[in-house]
Image (cartoon, rainbow, N blue to C red; front, side, top):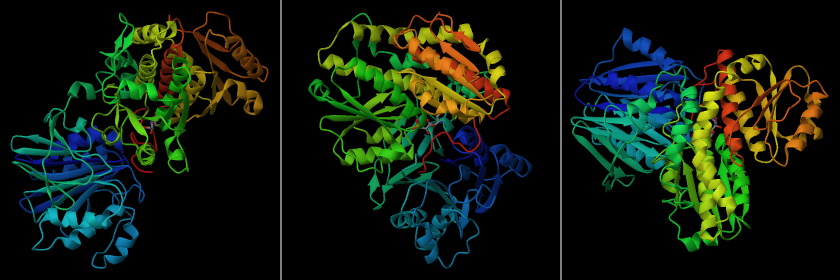
Length: 605
Ligand code: AGP
């Protein structure tokens, strides 16, 4: 995924472009570039590496001009390099692009008049636009003609020195937002880049093309028919996207989970009346009652959130059958879904390409789809039939933490809604509602009580090369998530396992290059999991046990987490895992918020 920005107004564009690129750097950061146009004269700066490398160039030689576009890249075609950085140029066209042009090879073969210098599909699209951009053709028409031929996904912004009064932008499959202000128009891949500049925005829809001028915009479809844009108000504020004094966004987002979870639950959990109230499902009680099967899809942490939620939904809704699938797998299978299925589509960014593609496959089968989404107005959020916004606020750090907690909680609320539609309102349901209501406070207690103890535990394990996380039942998906968190920010090879599976192979791995994280709940499986620890200890394991039990545990390190929760205790133990992974990554000197090779939202397949 990449970050796209643009500006046309009465100031030098560089100011906004560089600030906005810094804010979008989490979207991809292997190279960056801008072009500004000053009275017909373009100034281009591009650099391999982070936005700071680009900034060194713009500080040395400021790019002048009240019109400009910029880009921070997560490479898909062509290695990170200055040549492959955007903007890409062809003739008088400058282009920044997020997405993939799938027929770029065929197009390239046809574009004989252009000498290609980069390995990118983007340069091909720029050349295609330029091939239509002659004296009789407006910039917008040239872009539209090119997009009618190009196949793939794009969020683009196009500028030309021949047209110093317009920027043309367009989207198909990659988000693009236009910010509106008096005498100025902004372009950004997501709303966080606009905060502090304007709160009036148009979220472009797929297939739309926008002409941006100082005094406003015009929107068209790909048949050049005018479209009337809907102006929305951006909710995020500057404060919410800054680090607020934390060393890293990741720590901020772990610590703020009590608050962000409260906003997930706000107005939806009514303990007094033992009710869950969800708007936005767009389903009648009859339709809810009629649901017999739930399919949950997602990628990465969103998939693990679905895994954990599936255990809860089984417990809450008698007779409901459930399956959970990795979106990038299910989308290619010849899958069938039973009648009366509803699909929960879990995604923090709402832009993950595999999840979006899987959603579209599910919709082809006529199945109702509900989003469990954080990013308001995101592509997935606009394509599902209904859903639950988790309202966890912008999640900037590449590693997803607060979104996981909010996603699981939202799916639990959905499960209770199904139960209530069926007239189920037993002690279990009351239990879940009560624990949901207590969950933010319990997470707050865990953070307060243990955040100073965890760094010293992390120090014991920071130098290991391998880690094995294990747990049973609801702690199995939590073990998977804990392993993902550790591996993606510490680069320690880590995997999560069902505790009962260790004896079927993984204990062959145990040696001094490994440490193990054992997750235990004080429930009916406690003793069973203890025997898994014995198997590991017998082979010289180095176990860090995380548990809400007060019982003695034979492990190298034990963290007894004091919590009043029972069924939702896994979500509290997961916060310990998040802090553990964070402190190990910091101890290893890694770039915690922007781990190598990763991007916040994977909008390519
Ligand atoms: C999680 O920490 C990872 N950054 C990654 O697995 C992420 O969860 C996955 O790419 C899905 O993203 P989404 O929730 O935005 O769809």
